[in-house]
Image 1 (cartoon, helix red, strand yellow):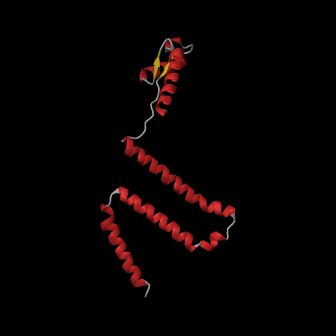
Image 2 (spheres, rainbow, N blue to C red):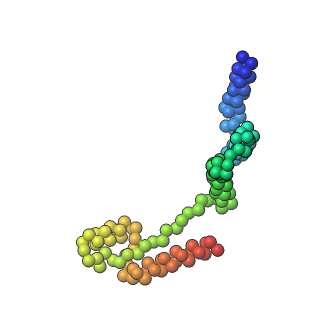
Image 3 (cartoon, helix red, strand yellow):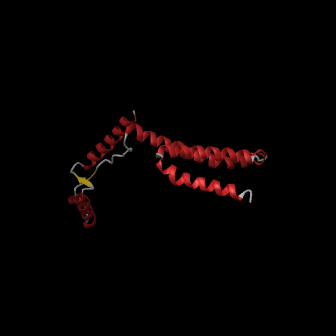
Length: 151
């Protein structure tokens, strides 16, 4: 009985906090609180099971450190992405170069000509007499623009 009443009281307080206080917080504050709770739980776990961790060999230690490393990696990548969104104001986008194919009339069989006509009419690709020259230039332009954005 001595454990039951305090547990119920703590449960009622936790429910009141969860339904009244937490929905009014911003996402940023909730992420900070969740991170602090995660660190506190990891500390409590490691201090509770200190002897078990001390008696393990290096392979078991590597197995125990794996989830912590994965959580840290996900946290830092997420933090970096959020920082990118905050500093630039928009998500990164990729530009796809347009492809150029030879005119469908130059195809040697009816199937290839039909596929070419369908691609050109849908706007997926451009047809040109200088298709080889244009595709080489498009590839070089895509490489140059990608390199200029990185520098």
